[in-house]
Every structure is written in structure tokens, then in C-alpha cells.
Image (cartoon, rainbow, N blue to C red; front, side, top):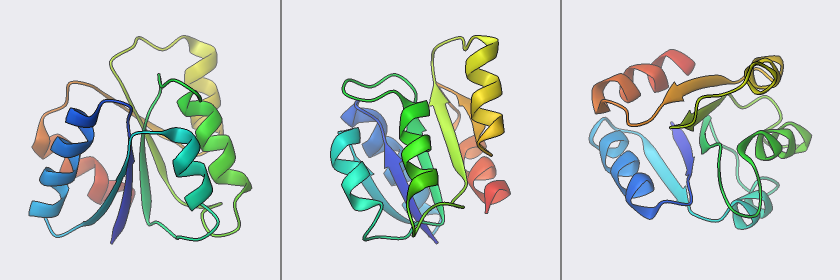
Length: 118
């Protein structure tokens, strides 16, 4: 199973990648949402984990781009956030078929969420 991890914090992407790889997932990490958007048309993912607050593009905007892509339009997405989301943000994420997971996360809970989404 192929997972994209997108977070502007390299420590978070490294940790997430390490945890998921230990459980047999293939992980591709990105720290720049603008770079990650370009990959959506050339590489298919089974799941996308994305931070909500990133320079260059908000996580919700990124999911909107995912939904427009040919290869990943139906790929499940999980927003990772340390921010308390307002109701409009929560509603938008759920309307796009996304889920929300709070940071910092317990590694085992992350693995459980990933398995649940797949």
C-alpha cells in the first residue's frame, strides 16, 4: 500500500514515514505542497496524509487538488493537525471524504487510522 505524507515539518514526515514503513507501508514524503501537487497526475496513492497548515498551500486546498486529479480523485485523505479546526474547516474536510487526526499523534494510533482508511 502506497502512502503520501505531506507536512512542511521534515521531522514529522520522517517520523510518520518511519512508523508506517515499520508496518509494511510504502511511503513517499513531501515537505512542499506545491511539489506534491505535481506528483498527483503521475503517481497513484492508496492514502494521503496531509498537514493542514503549510506555507504555499492550505491542507484543504491540497485535498481539493487531489480530488481534481485523474489518478488520485478517490484516494482517501487524512488531515493531520495540531490546530483546533473551526466548524467550516471540519465540514469541508468531511464533505471531501477526508478524516482528521490530531498531532501530536501516538504512532500506534496513526497505524490504526491508516489501516482503517485503507
